[in-house]
Length: 253
Picture 1 (cartoon, rainbow, N blue to C red):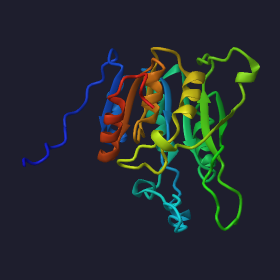
Picture 2 (cartoon, one colour; picture 1 turned 120 degrees about the horizontal axis):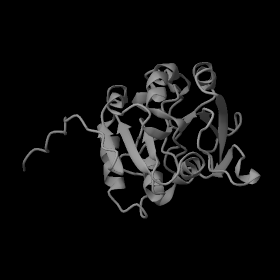
Picture 3 (cartoon, rainbow, N blue to C red; picture 1 turned 180 degrees about the vertical axis):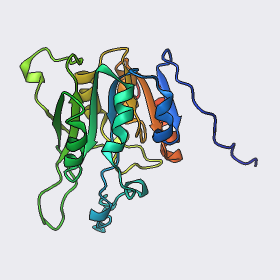
Picture 4 (cartoon, rainbow, N blue to C red; picture 1 turned 135 degrees about the vertical axis):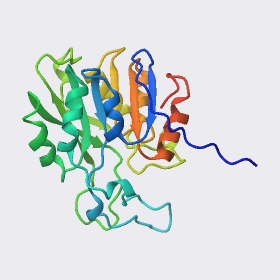
């Protein structure tokens, strides 16, 4: 049997007319390929720097272990400030930023991004089915934070006050939505991402996710008629995103 073909090492070329562009590699290098003021929405899920808090997965014995561990990529410290220059460069003046984060990182996001944007706020995602705490030691981790930042003149799609709550209620990924090969420990549900894209982008807009994972932001973007550029450094996750997004936009989930 012949060996698997070598990974494609060609440098990608940004084409604004192409709806779906998936770039395997390091976003710190590949973001430079995007033109200035070319992105309408940055919607991403970078590392949370939770490695030092990890106590390992919990195995109750009667079911699959509960995910309480972190991936290798989360062990490397992520600095939001280091990414600010490139995010500001590629984002249009009318664009928006949504970035998932954790309590331990919120201050660092605020310190760097509040002075750089006209407005800095947070959105709270309430998980209706958070992982249990079997020992009942402390609160359930049922809320996740999403940084939101924009400038004057940015694009919002609100039409009524009741659509303007900075609160999303949705379950975590389960069942058919969960990518199994490989399993991503922080895969976000498309329902949450669709809400963010509804708020901060319009059909035909370009959505960027420099920490694409298994392609959930891309699935939401394709289903909603947006263009998408996704970058992922892990080859296995990048390949999974490519397989997942090869389905038709209406079937992507």
